Image (cartoon, rainbow, N blue to C red; front, side, top):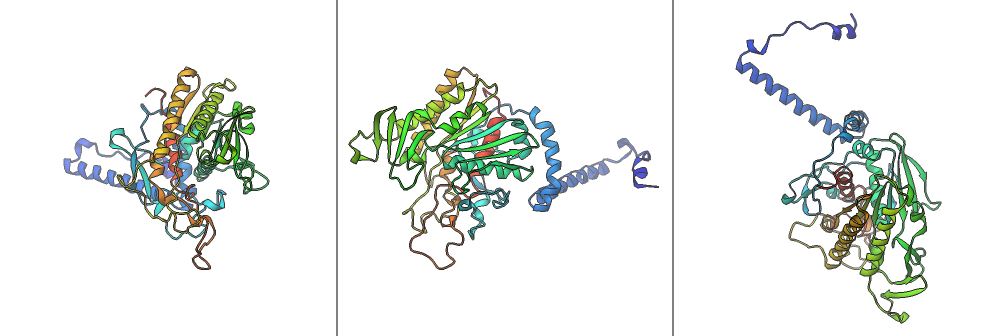
Length: 431
């Protein structure tokens, strides 16, 4: 008799629970519990390996994709405060080479010898009363099925976009729809996930507003920024964006001239041009305000979500070309450092402008804040540092070598940004 026939046979009657002793019932219950725990442990271990992901991921995809859209958290958690806690293997979720991350952020490939920076997870503060769930690729794609997810801003926006693509690619196939002819520039890239008809794009717009000069050509000494108009490429595509993640800030610290049309509003760090020094906080505020207004009113798309990320600070403890400028191996502990004054101000501007935009918009477009300032501040260990270069010490230790203490390694802490993004997308409006 075949295996199918054996499995199809009507089972012989089993004794009822009433005929089994209390001791035996307790043993059965413990055995069932032990079996469940062992199965879950085995699945977890399998998912951590390349073979296991191929075998086990489809099961998780089926379970989550078939039910996730119907499960909406009853409230939104405050992920803005908390601490990094030791969680071995938490961020060891993908191979950056396989998902084509930028070479300078592929720390493992570039020879970074330590990997402890991948063993931490973000734990929201006790006051939040919640946990931050692990990233779930099937859940994310189910939440944005048939939609265009766009990351707009500076290189931290691109850093997060590439993190998202890699996280999704662990479970679902994707294709590169478009990339710059010069792969090193990464001004505009687009990926597609056909299983859910999802498109992910990354738009380089470091000021969000139209800008020329150094932001386009590094041989120039400063940027010219027009605060009365948005950068052309992303603003022209705004009608197509269902989820827009806006992230900027670092270029505003650099020397710039700010215009309103043909009128010079002022400069930042350019005293030799004989214009009023206006700093960068007010230009930053105007760029955020103009961008959110444009997205909230563009195209009349129903269900659009605009997410504005707060500032993710750098950790240059020494000169930018000192090989030890960001060589820390562990996160800061609570009380060991604080959010800086300027990052805190930029964070407040995002909160204020998004709240004002939501009030003006009347709920037609959902506007959220992705508050990553505290969690990013606490991760000086997550940057490439000198491992933005391939095998930087192969020929000895140089006295001077450019370090990246701004972006995060991929995989790395920036993956947590997307864990929070997923929760924002699936939280109810109005807690």
